[in-house]
Image (cartoon, rainbow, N blue to C red; front, side):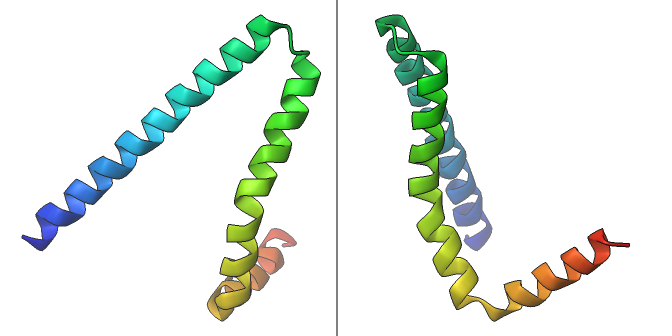
Length: 80
């Protein structure tokens, strides 16, 4: 029963992600058809993505000390 719930959550997550991607394509096509500059659209897209993702990144980084040790090990491995 637990395994079926996990699979259902995964499927629901994929469906939500696909709906968001489709919505993004519709919004971007409408914006570009209205005459928005491609460069301005990229700036707005990146700024809105930063506004959405930054709080999650901040709180996940601040609240999880194990991520700090993982990050340090990645940095050290990258320097090798």
